[in-house]
Length: 80
Image (cartoon, rainbow, N blue to C red; front, side, top):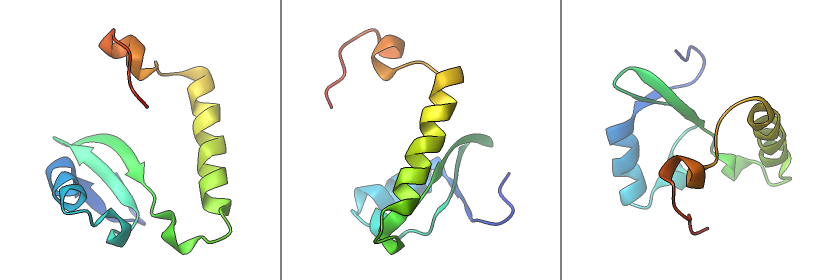
């Protein structure tokens, strides 16, 4: 449960996404039925790319120890 950043429920997060307004949303924790899904990071204030690179590094570290690729979970090829 986030204490320093806002919390969003999945339904409201999707509403903002469908309106094409994600770039306006503050970084925050996204939950579904009280379960943590992910942390949305608005990198729009980071012209240097530092935030994006640090996030990518942390995700690479996390992926090394847990999780499965989307295509393995869905058992089909995923278009990127």
